[in-house]
Amino acid sequence: MTVDHAVAPSRAAFHRLTVADVERLTDDSAAITFDVPSDLRGAFDFAAGQSLTLRRTIDGAEHRRSYSICAPAGARPRIGVREIPGGLFSSWLVREVRPGDGVEAQRPSGGFRADPGTGGRHLCVAAGSGITPMLSIASTVLADPDAEVTLLYGNRTSGSVMFAEELADLKDRYGPRFQLVHVLSREPRGVELFSGRLEADRLRRLLAAFVPVAALDHVWLCGPLGMIADAREVLAEAGVDASRIHVELFYVDEPPPEVRRPDEIVSGETSDVTIVLDGRATTAALPRDRTLLDGATAGRNDLPFACKGGVCGTCRARVRAGEVDMRRNYALEPDEVDAGFVLTCQSFAVSDAVTVDYDA
Image (cartoon, rainbow, N blue to C red):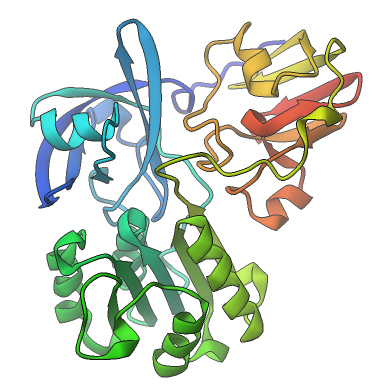
């Protein structure tokens, strides 16, 4: 079955964007701004908090990485990148990419997104490069005169703070509607509360000092797993409903552990898996001991993915029929899981027939 779609390019397709600007933020980080061809501008419109998946081929092998957009909604796409020692992508973007270079990118994606028209009180908690989507969210929602944002931002030292000047500019522009708290773990500050890691006890004290928790409309968390787990615990203790808490997880070292054992899937069996993307459905017998993404990619090279670690959410799809087993999930909200969405990079077919819809 094939259905024609002429509204927008496939979200799995890559498009060549031109680097418009590279701005060094710290010794090991940079912000890269892209120009989008006029015929693709609608396709590259993004919501505050979304990401770009980039592709690069090295020695004949394809590599992908997902980077959060740091620009406010309506601006040109701009990503913030912190260099990982030996990183195939991050070192290239921070050290080598120059204005005028071409970079392959997919359309913006991701469910970590803020509605600029909601107003209300927002709490943002970020660590390190987790500030990237927070800058987009804060600068977007503050354009609404009824919005207020408190940002708790943890870093090692003042020299490692990404977007320090832009955050200061936001504070100057919006005054009391934007509350900015810097917390440094390896550089003593005059107030003990601001010296250390964003762990549970410190978060409790920061919330008590700066945040009217009962009045919060949305909470945005972006950082490593430990910080996010502590923040969720503290917010739950304070009575913040889980539906108001939005999470973006990043990893710079090992992928997160599987939440269930891999021996639940019996090797050798197959399922008839139907993949729907851009209105085109294809069905193939896929082994149950391979993820839906890895199994289906053998027959379709247009499926969207980036990290393959259950973190970025690029491979999100909805199960329309059958049963699958999702081993790891750090990208989907509970209501998305309840609605049948899965991460195909972490999901294995269980029933004899399965249909997953990337267009949902």
